[in-house]
Image 1 (spheres, one colour):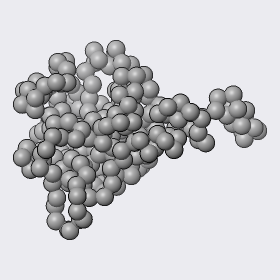
Image 2 (cartoon, rainbow, N blue to C red; image 1 turned 45 degrees about the horizontal axis):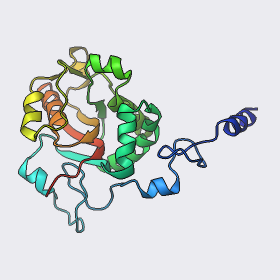
Image 3 (tube, one colour; image 1 turned 30 degrees about the horizontal axis):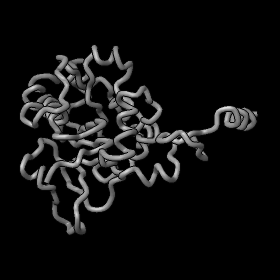
Length: 242
C-alpha cells in the first residue's frame, strides 16, 4: 500500500532538481548539468578553512595563504562547496529564498567532508541567528544544516547552545577588521546549555565562510565556556583574493 501511495505522489509531484527545477530521478537531488556546475571541494585542502589547494597531502598541516596571514581560533575547518556558480545560487536560495528543503541534501554533502575532522563525542552546534531575523526568515539556515548533518552522522546536535546577544549590522561589504569589530561581544553560550559544552569538541556549522569573523566569535565564546576543542564546517567557502 505504501509503495502505491509513493508511486501516486511521484506521478502527481515528480521530483525536481534543486538547482534548475528540471525533473530528476529522486527527491532532493541535482540534475546532471547542475551537478557539474556545482563546485564541490575535494582533494588537498587548507586545514583551517577547507579551501582547495594545489599539490598532494604530505602528512604535514597545510594552510592557505589567507589562513596563515590571519590565523583562526579553531583547530580544523572544512567546507563542502566553493561559493560560486550554482553552489552560490543554492546557498542564497537556502538563506534568503525560502528554500529550507535544500538543507537535506546539503547535510549529506557536509557529512562527506565532516568525517575527516570528526572525533568521538563531538557536539554539532549551529551559528545562531538573532531573534528579530529569525522572526522575519522563520528559520535559521545554519540550524537546519546542523540538524541535517547530525542526522547523517548520528551525532548530538544542540541548536540553541549559542545565542546572538545583539542584532548586528549586515556584514556584507565590510572589511575583515570591520566584521570582527561588529561581532565583538555579540555571541554567548546559552547558560541553560552550558553543561553540554564542558570538555567536549564542538563542530560549528554555518552556511558560508568569508573572513571567518562570525565563526571566530562563536569559537571564542565556546572556548571561554569550557569547550575542549572547536572545529568548523561550512556549506560553502568564499574564495579569498590572492
